[in-house]
Amino acid sequence: RRAINFMKKIMIKSLFLGFPEFLPLFLLFIYFSTNLSSVNGFVAPDQSFSFLRSRRNNIIRLPSAIIMSLSNAKGQQQQQQQQQQQEPQWDPATQTYKDGIVPAHESMSLSLEELLSLNHGKLKIFGYGSLCWHPGSKGVLSLANIAEDEHDHERKDNAVAKRKVTTDPGRAIGYQRCWAQRSADHRGTTEFNGIVCTLLSDEEVWRFHHPRNGDDCGEDMEEMEKMLMQSMRPSMTEGLIYTVDEDLVEHCLAELDFREKGGYARDVIDVIEDETGNIVKALLYR
Image (cartoon, rainbow, N blue to C red; front, side, top):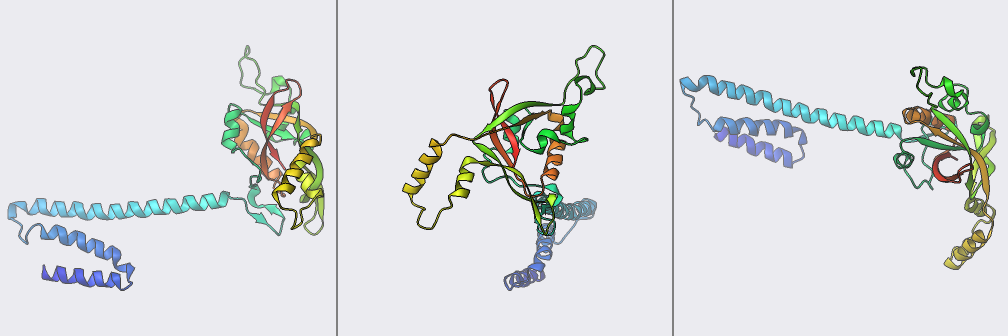
């Protein structure tokens, strides 16, 4: 017991002096010394088997707990690495987002989960440029061009075919289609970028044409700008509203993110269906 107490003092001093690597050894020592001291240094012959069995169980149990804690820590570290890998990373060499993972636009007010919930699990996308006339020949959005009776090949004879992707004409109020996006993958090169379409809000266009100086940042100036913008007739951009079934949403998003990886970001805006006049929330790349 004197030796045990002496070793405890040495290890405690070592920890305070800045040797944290002694911590696992110290915990093991405390554990076994506490259990050994409980038998008062004597084991009866008829209790020797139970004593050894209890010591064996304790020896197995403690390393198992340590292994579990280490595996949990490793799992958390892997989860953090996966989250970091899912974050958008801009590659200056190719001038695209790595792995086709695009960011959320700074004005995006709804998360993707909230958008899907509003549309009963379906994904609505507003196309204002090439998505209107060239959604692709093999991707998810290309299903909108397939005839109604070709969508569901596994249906029964009397069942109605289910269209997986539909389109409806629609419009975005307060947004302008502008040739204002530089591109190194769709058009142009990394040395000499091309210009492609994007969608800008009326306020963003106003800010572009009326940049603020250092002396024009007061509240009166902001109020005057708001009054001027409200007095102007809002812009209107016609396009196509895609509606994608729930089972194709994840695949569709992966395709669109990769397609728009050259500087676009996800946003959610209000669009109006031309036929019904209903206002719906739709995903937008701009």
